[in-house]
Picture 1: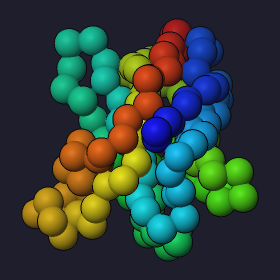
Picture 2: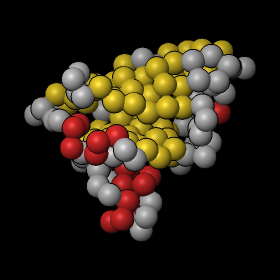
Picture 3: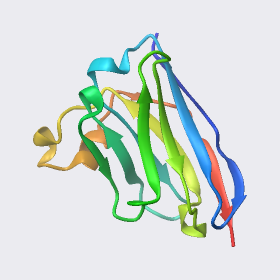
Length: 130
């Protein structure tokens, strides 16, 4: 049984940092892709970041470029999302997802490939206060 377990969410003030972790059991990240999706109240879900096989290809939403970094630790089978310079508009539930496919199959949309991922974590709340 595949499980994705997220941790690291919480409450911070604007300008602060958090690091989200997503540990996988029953699934190996080493050859697939994973990413982070967020959902804020009253807003559409948004693909935040994705990393594809080997870690050579990473993608970020324009809203987080330069502030968020997705990384991997294959030895721990864990992926991370380092979030710096947080803003109130980053407040959302963050979900890690895994087993997604090349954006080629989604009209070139990497976020579309995340939304179609097979495995989802339970979500972790991130709250940024001004």
